[in-house]
Image (cartoon, rainbow, N blue to C red; front, side, top):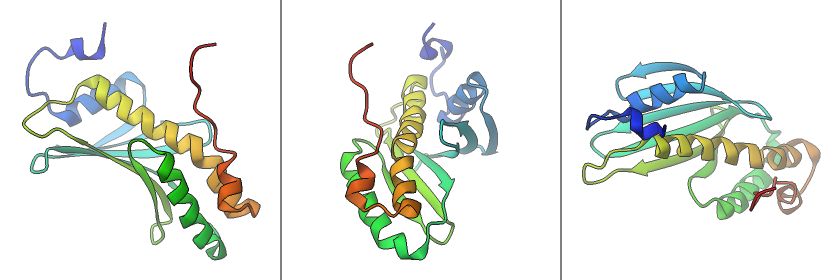
Length: 166
């Protein structure tokens, strides 16, 4: 059964869908408010903190995926250059570094203008894309910050996306 087949009534709140998905995947989660949920999603490299928030005014479901990172101060110019290179490769969403909070951040907004509803498949794909992007570029960011690699050299180790089937 498709995820969307579980929702037969109209106007399901997007955060209710996220909560159901989190429970389905056995992710730890906390419903912070009616319009916001936080969860922990285990990746290969680390556990990612993911927050989704719904803004009815903007008709946008915003996803923020973070993990702690304290790069040495002298690597910050290279880190910012690497983030620009990484963001050039991202089709959806983008990375930034919140220096004060010491967090690497991947952000994405799903705009549902005109009263559209988000489907469970859309939201599941959104979360999966965030974790996949964080996982893909994690080694490059680590090599730049602690391995002494240049931004372009570090980017070469980013895990390539697989195409086709084995």
